[in-house]
Length: 441
Image (cartoon, rainbow, N blue to C red; front, side, top):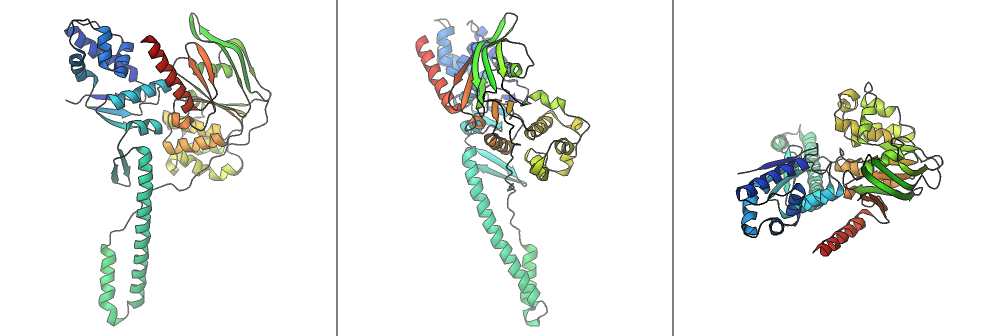
Protein backbone atom coordinates (compact mmCIF):
# COMPACT_ATOMS: atom_id res chain seq x y z
CA UNK A 1 0.00 0.00 0.00
CA UNK A 2 1.36 3.45 -0.92
CA UNK A 3 0.93 6.29 1.56
CA UNK A 4 1.26 9.70 -0.12
CA UNK A 5 2.36 12.70 1.91
CA UNK A 6 2.19 16.11 0.17
CA UNK A 7 4.30 19.05 1.32
CA UNK A 8 2.90 22.09 -0.50
CA UNK A 9 3.56 25.84 -0.66
CA UNK A 10 1.26 26.62 2.25
CA UNK A 11 3.71 25.30 4.84
CA UNK A 12 1.79 22.19 5.88
CA UNK A 13 4.81 20.23 7.06
CA UNK A 14 4.02 20.57 10.78
CA UNK A 15 0.41 19.55 10.19
CA UNK A 16 1.68 16.44 8.46
CA UNK A 17 3.97 15.69 11.38
CA UNK A 18 0.98 16.13 13.71
CA UNK A 19 -0.90 13.56 11.64
CA UNK A 20 2.00 11.13 11.78
CA UNK A 21 2.36 11.65 15.52
CA UNK A 22 -1.37 10.92 15.96
CA UNK A 23 -0.95 7.71 13.99
CA UNK A 24 2.01 6.71 16.14
CA UNK A 25 0.08 7.43 19.32
CA UNK A 26 -2.79 5.30 18.03
CA UNK A 27 -0.37 2.37 17.76
CA UNK A 28 0.93 3.06 21.26
CA UNK A 29 -2.64 3.13 22.60
CA UNK A 30 -3.35 -0.30 21.12
CA UNK A 31 -0.47 -1.74 23.16
CA UNK A 32 -0.92 0.30 26.33
CA UNK A 33 2.20 2.36 25.80
CA UNK A 34 2.42 6.01 26.86
CA UNK A 35 1.76 8.65 24.20
CA UNK A 36 4.42 11.11 23.04
CA UNK A 37 4.36 14.75 21.98
CA UNK A 38 5.01 16.07 18.49
CA UNK A 39 8.43 17.31 19.65
CA UNK A 40 9.24 13.81 20.92
CA UNK A 41 8.03 12.41 17.61
CA UNK A 42 10.41 14.75 15.75
CA UNK A 43 13.19 13.54 18.04
CA UNK A 44 12.24 9.95 17.22
CA UNK A 45 12.39 10.50 13.48
CA UNK A 46 15.62 12.43 13.71
CA UNK A 47 17.43 10.14 16.13
CA UNK A 48 15.93 6.74 15.53
CA UNK A 49 12.78 4.98 16.81
CA UNK A 50 14.71 2.67 19.22
CA UNK A 51 15.95 5.69 21.21
CA UNK A 52 12.40 6.96 21.58
CA UNK A 53 11.20 3.58 22.87
CA UNK A 54 14.06 3.37 25.37
CA UNK A 55 13.07 6.77 26.71
CA UNK A 56 9.28 6.75 26.57
CA UNK A 57 8.01 3.16 26.71
CA UNK A 58 7.67 1.02 29.85
CA UNK A 59 10.18 -1.71 30.55
CA UNK A 60 7.72 -4.51 29.76
CA UNK A 61 6.76 -3.08 26.36
CA UNK A 62 7.73 -4.66 23.09
CA UNK A 63 11.32 -4.42 21.93
CA UNK A 64 12.38 -1.27 20.06
CA UNK A 65 12.67 -3.32 16.89
CA UNK A 66 9.08 -4.58 17.18
CA UNK A 67 7.71 -1.09 17.80
CA UNK A 68 9.78 0.29 14.93
CA UNK A 69 8.25 -2.27 12.60
CA UNK A 70 4.73 -1.40 13.78
CA UNK A 71 5.22 2.35 13.52
CA UNK A 72 6.81 2.01 10.08
CA UNK A 73 3.35 1.28 8.67
CA UNK A 74 2.36 4.82 9.60
CA UNK A 75 5.57 6.86 9.61
CA UNK A 76 7.37 5.55 6.51
CA UNK A 77 5.23 5.84 3.36
CA UNK A 78 6.42 4.01 0.27
CA UNK A 79 6.50 7.21 -1.80
CA UNK A 80 6.87 10.82 -0.71
CA UNK A 81 5.74 13.45 -3.22
CA UNK A 82 7.26 16.80 -2.25
CA UNK A 83 6.27 20.01 -4.05
CA UNK A 84 8.65 22.83 -3.02
CA UNK A 85 8.91 21.47 0.55
CA UNK A 86 11.55 23.96 1.75
CA UNK A 87 9.83 27.21 0.75
CA UNK A 88 8.46 28.03 4.20
CA UNK A 89 10.90 26.12 6.39
CA UNK A 90 13.65 27.75 8.43
CA UNK A 91 17.24 26.71 7.87
CA UNK A 92 17.26 24.26 10.79
CA UNK A 93 14.05 22.56 9.63
CA UNK A 94 15.47 22.16 6.14
CA UNK A 95 18.43 20.31 7.65
CA UNK A 96 16.08 18.14 9.72
CA UNK A 97 13.98 17.31 6.65
CA UNK A 98 17.10 16.36 4.71
CA UNK A 99 18.22 13.98 7.44
CA UNK A 100 14.77 12.42 7.59
CA UNK A 101 14.56 11.89 3.82
CA UNK A 102 18.10 10.53 3.56
CA UNK A 103 17.85 8.15 6.51
CA UNK A 104 14.16 7.20 6.72
CA UNK A 105 12.35 7.71 3.42
CA UNK A 106 11.95 4.89 0.91
CA UNK A 107 11.26 6.68 -2.37
CA UNK A 108 11.08 10.44 -2.85
CA UNK A 109 9.87 12.48 -5.83
CA UNK A 110 10.68 16.15 -5.30
CA UNK A 111 10.05 19.39 -7.18
CA UNK A 112 12.34 22.03 -5.73
CA UNK A 113 14.38 25.10 -6.64
CA UNK A 114 16.61 24.65 -3.57
CA UNK A 115 19.82 23.45 -5.24
CA UNK A 116 21.62 22.32 -2.07
CA UNK A 117 18.56 20.47 -0.79
CA UNK A 118 18.09 18.66 -4.11
CA UNK A 119 21.79 17.80 -4.32
CA UNK A 120 21.79 16.36 -0.80
CA UNK A 121 18.70 14.15 -1.03
CA UNK A 122 18.52 12.97 -4.66
CA UNK A 123 20.36 10.31 -6.67
CA UNK A 124 18.36 10.69 -9.86
CA UNK A 125 17.31 13.68 -11.99
CA UNK A 126 14.56 13.63 -14.63
CA UNK A 127 14.53 16.44 -17.20
CA UNK A 128 11.53 17.22 -19.40
CA UNK A 129 12.40 19.42 -22.38
CA UNK A 130 11.08 19.92 -25.92
CA UNK A 131 8.71 16.95 -25.63
CA UNK A 132 11.48 14.60 -24.50
CA UNK A 133 12.31 13.03 -21.15
CA UNK A 134 15.91 12.46 -20.09
CA UNK A 135 16.66 10.26 -17.08
CA UNK A 136 19.98 10.77 -15.30
CA UNK A 137 21.06 8.49 -12.43
CA UNK A 138 22.87 11.33 -10.67
CA UNK A 139 22.08 14.32 -8.45
CA UNK A 140 21.37 17.82 -9.77
CA UNK A 141 24.93 19.19 -9.94
CA UNK A 142 26.21 16.11 -11.75
CA UNK A 143 23.20 16.30 -14.06
CA UNK A 144 24.18 19.84 -15.09
CA UNK A 145 27.58 18.55 -16.20
CA UNK A 146 26.07 15.65 -18.15
CA UNK A 147 23.42 17.92 -19.71
CA UNK A 148 26.12 20.28 -20.93
CA UNK A 149 28.01 17.35 -22.48
CA UNK A 150 24.80 16.09 -24.09
CA UNK A 151 24.01 19.48 -25.57
CA UNK A 152 27.55 19.87 -26.91
CA UNK A 153 27.22 16.47 -28.59
CA UNK A 154 23.81 17.44 -29.98
CA UNK A 155 25.22 20.70 -31.33
CA UNK A 156 28.11 18.88 -33.03
CA UNK A 157 25.70 16.41 -34.65
CA UNK A 158 23.36 19.27 -35.63
CA UNK A 159 26.16 21.25 -37.28
CA UNK A 160 27.40 18.17 -39.18
CA UNK A 161 23.86 17.44 -40.38
CA UNK A 162 23.30 21.06 -41.43
CA UNK A 163 26.55 20.97 -43.40
CA UNK A 164 25.46 17.75 -45.12
CA UNK A 165 22.01 19.22 -45.90
CA UNK A 166 23.54 22.34 -47.43
CA UNK A 167 25.98 20.29 -49.55
CA UNK A 168 23.07 18.12 -50.74
CA UNK A 169 20.97 21.16 -51.64
CA UNK A 170 23.92 22.66 -53.52
CA UNK A 171 24.28 19.41 -55.50
CA UNK A 172 20.55 19.37 -56.33
CA UNK A 173 20.59 23.03 -57.40
CA UNK A 174 23.70 22.51 -59.52
CA UNK A 175 22.60 19.40 -61.39
CA UNK A 176 18.77 19.58 -61.40
CA UNK A 177 18.78 20.32 -65.16
CA UNK A 178 21.48 17.80 -66.09
CA UNK A 179 20.02 14.64 -67.69
CA UNK A 180 22.94 12.39 -66.66
CA UNK A 181 22.48 13.38 -63.00
CA UNK A 182 18.67 13.01 -62.86
CA UNK A 183 18.66 9.81 -60.78
CA UNK A 184 21.22 11.19 -58.32
CA UNK A 185 19.26 14.43 -57.93
CA UNK A 186 15.98 12.55 -57.35
CA UNK A 187 17.71 10.26 -54.85
CA UNK A 188 19.03 13.21 -52.85
CA UNK A 189 15.65 14.98 -52.91
CA UNK A 190 13.97 11.88 -51.46
CA UNK A 191 16.74 11.54 -48.88
CA UNK A 192 16.15 15.11 -47.66
CA UNK A 193 12.40 14.53 -47.49
CA UNK A 194 12.85 11.48 -45.29
CA UNK A 195 15.70 12.92 -43.20
CA UNK A 196 14.98 13.14 -39.47
CA UNK A 197 16.27 16.51 -38.37
CA UNK A 198 18.45 16.72 -35.30
CA UNK A 199 17.16 19.19 -32.69
CA UNK A 200 19.27 20.86 -30.05
CA UNK A 201 17.66 21.15 -26.62
CA UNK A 202 16.59 24.64 -25.66
CA UNK A 203 19.04 26.62 -23.61
CA UNK A 204 19.04 30.33 -22.77
CA UNK A 205 22.40 31.71 -23.84
CA UNK A 206 21.58 35.39 -23.22
CA UNK A 207 23.52 35.25 -19.91
CA UNK A 208 21.74 38.30 -18.52
CA UNK A 209 23.85 40.07 -15.93
CA UNK A 210 21.67 42.34 -13.86
CA UNK A 211 23.28 45.39 -12.30
CA UNK A 212 21.83 47.55 -9.57
CA UNK A 213 21.94 51.32 -10.00
CA UNK A 214 25.00 52.77 -8.20
CA UNK A 215 24.32 53.03 -4.48
CA UNK A 216 24.18 56.64 -3.19
CA UNK A 217 26.80 57.54 -0.62
CA UNK A 218 25.71 56.91 2.97
CA UNK A 219 27.22 56.95 6.45
CA UNK A 220 29.81 54.37 7.50
CA UNK A 221 27.33 52.53 9.74
CA UNK A 222 23.87 52.14 8.16
CA UNK A 223 22.46 50.28 11.20
CA UNK A 224 23.49 50.41 14.86
CA UNK A 225 21.54 48.64 17.62
CA UNK A 226 22.07 48.89 21.36
CA UNK A 227 19.97 46.77 23.71
CA UNK A 228 17.19 46.31 21.18
CA UNK A 229 14.41 43.96 22.21
CA UNK A 230 10.83 43.09 21.30
CA UNK A 231 8.07 41.63 23.43
CA UNK A 232 4.36 41.00 22.94
CA UNK A 233 2.86 41.09 26.43
CA UNK A 234 4.63 38.36 28.39
CA UNK A 235 6.10 36.79 25.27
CA UNK A 236 9.74 37.74 24.67
CA UNK A 237 10.77 37.47 21.01
CA UNK A 238 14.36 38.63 21.61
CA UNK A 239 16.11 40.99 24.00
CA UNK A 240 19.35 42.96 24.32
CA UNK A 241 20.35 42.76 20.63
CA UNK A 242 23.59 44.67 20.05
CA UNK A 243 24.87 44.80 16.50
CA UNK A 244 26.62 47.16 14.12
CA UNK A 245 26.30 46.81 10.36
CA UNK A 246 28.97 48.63 8.36
CA UNK A 247 28.57 50.14 4.91
CA UNK A 248 29.12 47.42 2.30
CA UNK A 249 28.38 44.53 4.70
CA UNK A 250 26.36 41.62 3.36
CA UNK A 251 24.76 39.78 6.26
CA UNK A 252 22.24 36.99 6.79
CA UNK A 253 19.55 36.67 9.46
CA UNK A 254 18.99 32.97 10.17
CA UNK A 255 17.24 30.87 12.79
CA UNK A 256 14.05 29.00 13.46
CA UNK A 257 10.73 30.45 12.35
CA UNK A 258 9.21 32.60 15.07
CA UNK A 259 12.52 33.62 16.67
CA UNK A 260 12.34 37.25 15.48
CA UNK A 261 14.15 37.58 12.13
CA UNK A 262 11.32 39.35 10.33
CA UNK A 263 10.40 41.17 13.53
CA UNK A 264 13.83 42.78 13.73
CA UNK A 265 13.60 43.72 10.06
CA UNK A 266 10.31 45.48 10.78
CA UNK A 267 11.98 47.29 13.67
CA UNK A 268 14.66 48.55 11.27
CA UNK A 269 11.92 49.66 8.87
CA UNK A 270 10.21 51.58 11.69
CA UNK A 271 7.09 49.44 11.43
CA UNK A 272 7.31 48.14 15.02
CA UNK A 273 8.09 49.78 18.34
CA UNK A 274 10.91 48.19 20.33
CA UNK A 275 13.08 48.45 23.41
CA UNK A 276 16.59 49.89 23.24
CA UNK A 277 18.17 52.17 20.64
CA UNK A 278 18.14 51.56 16.90
CA UNK A 279 19.94 54.16 14.79
CA UNK A 280 20.03 54.42 11.00
CA UNK A 281 23.10 56.09 9.49
CA UNK A 282 23.36 59.29 7.47
CA UNK A 283 21.53 59.27 4.10
CA UNK A 284 20.41 55.63 4.43
CA UNK A 285 17.88 54.85 1.70
CA UNK A 286 16.26 51.45 2.23
CA UNK A 287 14.96 49.08 -0.40
CA UNK A 288 12.73 46.53 1.33
CA UNK A 289 11.38 43.28 -0.04
CA UNK A 290 8.93 41.08 1.84
CA UNK A 291 6.16 38.79 0.68
CA UNK A 292 3.52 41.48 1.26
CA UNK A 293 5.36 43.93 -1.02
CA UNK A 294 3.56 42.30 -3.93
CA UNK A 295 0.24 43.67 -2.64
CA UNK A 296 1.50 47.25 -3.04
CA UNK A 297 1.83 47.05 -6.83
CA UNK A 298 -0.50 49.13 -9.03
CA UNK A 299 -3.04 46.56 -10.23
CA UNK A 300 -4.06 48.61 -13.27
CA UNK A 301 -0.62 48.55 -14.86
CA UNK A 302 0.76 45.75 -17.04
CA UNK A 303 3.88 43.82 -16.09
CA UNK A 304 5.87 45.74 -18.71
CA UNK A 305 4.52 49.14 -17.60
CA UNK A 306 5.37 48.39 -13.97
CA UNK A 307 9.03 47.95 -14.84
CA UNK A 308 9.16 50.56 -17.60
CA UNK A 309 8.07 53.20 -15.08
CA UNK A 310 11.13 52.65 -12.84
CA UNK A 311 13.83 51.50 -15.30
CA UNK A 312 16.49 54.12 -16.03
CA UNK A 313 19.73 54.16 -18.01
CA UNK A 314 21.11 51.20 -19.97
CA UNK A 315 18.75 48.69 -18.36
CA UNK A 316 15.86 50.24 -20.32
CA UNK A 317 17.21 48.50 -23.41
CA UNK A 318 17.08 45.16 -21.62
CA UNK A 319 13.64 45.27 -20.03
CA UNK A 320 12.43 42.32 -22.16
CA UNK A 321 15.51 40.27 -21.18
CA UNK A 322 15.03 41.22 -17.53
CA UNK A 323 11.37 40.18 -17.57
CA UNK A 324 12.35 36.92 -19.28
CA UNK A 325 14.92 36.15 -16.60
CA UNK A 326 12.14 36.44 -14.00
CA UNK A 327 9.78 34.23 -16.02
CA UNK A 328 7.79 36.96 -17.81
CA UNK A 329 9.41 36.19 -21.16
CA UNK A 330 6.60 35.98 -23.70
CA UNK A 331 4.58 38.94 -25.04
CA UNK A 332 1.43 37.62 -23.35
CA UNK A 333 3.13 37.41 -19.95
CA UNK A 334 4.61 40.92 -20.12
CA UNK A 335 1.30 42.47 -21.16
CA UNK A 336 -0.74 40.92 -18.35
CA UNK A 337 -2.36 43.29 -15.90
CA UNK A 338 -0.97 43.07 -12.38
CA UNK A 339 -4.45 42.35 -11.03
CA UNK A 340 -4.60 38.97 -12.83
CA UNK A 341 -1.18 37.77 -11.65
CA UNK A 342 -0.82 34.94 -9.16
CA UNK A 343 0.83 35.50 -5.81
CA UNK A 344 4.13 34.08 -7.02
CA UNK A 345 4.08 36.22 -10.18
CA UNK A 346 3.41 39.37 -8.15
CA UNK A 347 6.30 38.50 -5.85
CA UNK A 348 8.70 38.15 -8.78
CA UNK A 349 7.49 41.43 -10.28
CA UNK A 350 7.95 43.26 -6.96
CA UNK A 351 11.48 41.87 -6.80
CA UNK A 352 12.35 43.23 -10.29
CA UNK A 353 10.92 46.64 -9.39
CA UNK A 354 13.03 46.80 -6.23
CA UNK A 355 16.22 45.86 -8.09
CA UNK A 356 15.89 48.90 -10.37
CA UNK A 357 15.63 51.54 -7.64
CA UNK A 358 18.82 53.21 -6.27
CA UNK A 359 19.21 52.43 -2.55
CA UNK A 360 22.00 52.28 0.02
CA UNK A 361 20.57 49.44 2.13
CA UNK A 362 18.75 46.42 0.71
CA UNK A 363 16.66 44.31 3.10
CA UNK A 364 15.31 41.11 1.54
CA UNK A 365 12.99 38.81 3.51
CA UNK A 366 12.91 35.34 1.90
CA UNK A 367 13.54 36.65 -1.64
CA UNK A 368 13.99 33.25 -3.32
CA UNK A 369 10.72 31.49 -2.43
CA UNK A 370 9.14 31.92 -5.88
CA UNK A 371 12.28 31.94 -8.04
CA UNK A 372 13.68 29.12 -10.16
CA UNK A 373 17.36 28.20 -10.02
CA UNK A 374 18.42 30.28 -13.01
CA UNK A 375 16.64 33.38 -11.71
CA UNK A 376 18.16 32.88 -8.26
CA UNK A 377 21.62 32.75 -9.85
CA UNK A 378 20.95 36.04 -11.69
CA UNK A 379 19.70 37.68 -8.48
CA UNK A 380 22.61 36.34 -6.43
CA UNK A 381 25.20 37.66 -8.88
CA UNK A 382 23.49 41.06 -8.90
CA UNK A 383 23.56 41.16 -5.10
CA UNK A 384 27.23 40.17 -5.04
CA UNK A 385 27.96 43.08 -7.40
CA UNK A 386 25.77 45.49 -5.39
CA UNK A 387 27.98 48.20 -3.85
CA UNK A 388 25.61 49.01 -0.99
CA UNK A 389 24.71 47.16 2.22
CA UNK A 390 22.62 43.98 2.27
CA UNK A 391 20.55 42.27 4.95
CA UNK A 392 18.91 39.05 3.79
CA UNK A 393 16.57 36.74 5.67
CA UNK A 394 16.80 33.35 3.98
CA UNK A 395 16.91 29.60 4.54
CA UNK A 396 18.47 28.92 1.11
CA UNK A 397 22.03 27.81 1.86
CA UNK A 398 23.20 27.75 -1.75
CA UNK A 399 21.89 31.29 -2.26
CA UNK A 400 23.66 32.56 0.86
CA UNK A 401 26.93 30.76 0.13
CA UNK A 402 29.48 33.22 -1.22
CA UNK A 403 27.01 36.11 -0.81
CA UNK A 404 27.15 36.87 2.92
CA UNK A 405 30.22 37.21 5.14
CA UNK A 406 28.43 37.65 8.44
CA UNK A 407 25.58 35.65 10.01
CA UNK A 408 23.23 36.77 12.77
CA UNK A 409 21.64 33.78 14.51
CA UNK A 410 18.22 34.19 16.13
CA UNK A 411 17.30 31.77 18.92
CA UNK A 412 16.59 31.45 22.64
CA UNK A 413 15.52 35.12 22.76
CA UNK A 414 18.97 36.25 21.63
CA UNK A 415 20.67 37.54 18.48
CA UNK A 416 24.20 36.16 18.15
CA UNK A 417 26.83 37.39 15.66
CA UNK A 418 28.99 34.97 13.65
CA UNK A 419 31.81 36.47 11.56
CA UNK A 420 31.77 33.83 8.84
CA UNK A 421 29.89 32.52 5.82
CA UNK A 422 26.80 30.32 5.97
CA UNK A 423 28.48 26.91 5.74
CA UNK A 424 31.08 27.73 8.37
CA UNK A 425 28.21 28.87 10.61
CA UNK A 426 26.25 25.65 10.00
CA UNK A 427 29.33 23.55 10.76
CA UNK A 428 29.80 25.48 14.00
CA UNK A 429 26.15 24.91 14.91
CA UNK A 430 26.50 21.21 14.18
CA UNK A 431 29.46 20.92 16.55
CA UNK A 432 27.59 22.90 19.24
CA UNK A 433 24.57 20.59 18.95
CA UNK A 434 26.81 17.53 19.25
CA UNK A 435 28.42 18.94 22.39
CA UNK A 436 24.95 19.61 23.85
CA UNK A 437 23.93 16.01 23.17
CA UNK A 438 27.13 14.74 24.77
CA UNK A 439 26.40 16.80 27.91
CA UNK A 440 22.86 15.36 28.15
CA UNK A 441 24.14 11.81 27.75
